[in-house]
Length: 136
Image (cartoon, rainbow, N blue to C red; front, side, top):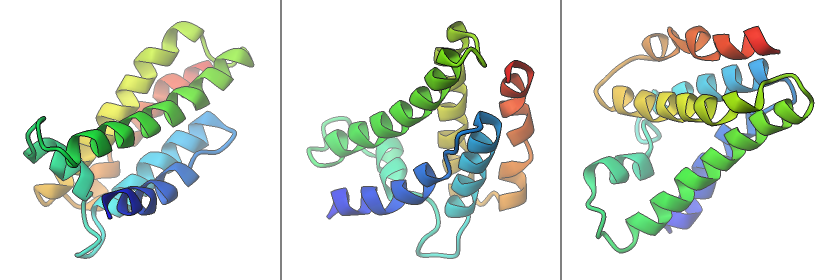
């Protein structure tokens, strides 16, 4: 059941990725903000909530959470790596930008859990993608 939920949640978020990295990551973060602030019961992400509130030894949640995080990380890093191959982005920036975008995604989920509204979550997106604008 959790695996089906993971695919249901990841599909729309990862579908936001596009050929242009600025548009892709702006869309990814915006899409996540919409999901995280949706009307209940769709609000927030149960997997991220489980990762934050669960224990590392929770048998079903740990592998699922790791796979969830890895899939998102791979998609982001892959998009950035393609830009590096096309010489639109310095390869040395790929790991740091991947971590910045991941941290923003997960931080937005936590803020939404605390009641932050969509407008608050998207307020800083431009600052997160600014390094991409400079490179691309």
